[in-house]
Length: 313
Image (cartoon, rainbow, N blue to C red):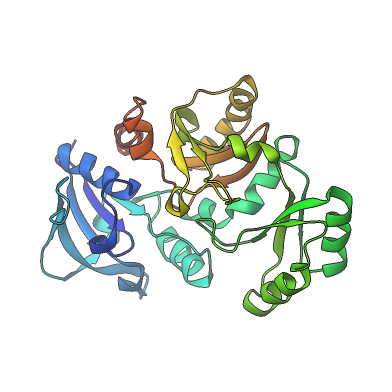
């Protein structure tokens, strides 16, 4: 089955081909003989009921420093594509939300992965609260009084921007931390949105597990262990990946959320689990494909394309 695939992503010349999941998906598409075009979110337009983009034909190869070839720019009616991969990284801001509204105009005639309406309706740190039995104590607010009370109750907390990504702006704040006031001033000054506050989970020292689901089914997992002196386990800030297996609790989490992900058309998702608690559900541009494969796990890029091709049939 040869498909026409449009990939909406961040600048391809800047990606790390050994760690970027979008590149892994593009390599698998190339292997299967799909015709690919590439464009960035700012190349997307909507006029007179038609969704278009200034695109360039794309070929990829696993050669560091020479991993892609682009053709000349041309305007493409994206309703003529079979598949659009919406893969640019957050922040989940109004530009991101606007892109979901535009792409929703062509879905599902053109299959947008993940479903843009459901991506818009499932902000990663808010969506997780729909599964309250699996998450740590969590507060979402701009009210400093509520945040102080939460810290007084749990003594040790994590502060995060509600729509941030990649571990940016994540702080661990203990009860006696004298920087708390300054941190709250910073959040108030730089973010209009509420913050998310969670009880600190000491199990993060053992790792923050990324579990990948494809069309609602478990596909693979990797554990990410933070370096000494760092509260974040994200790999781009030094987190060390290691092989892992699912616990009974993690299997229960996957069984509970999987059907909902499938129903919403969220084909490629990643959840984060620390100890017994799920902290996020990633639906925008999940990562982890390379790491799972590197430690002997499934070829998740192939599983994603299997799911897409089933839907296109």
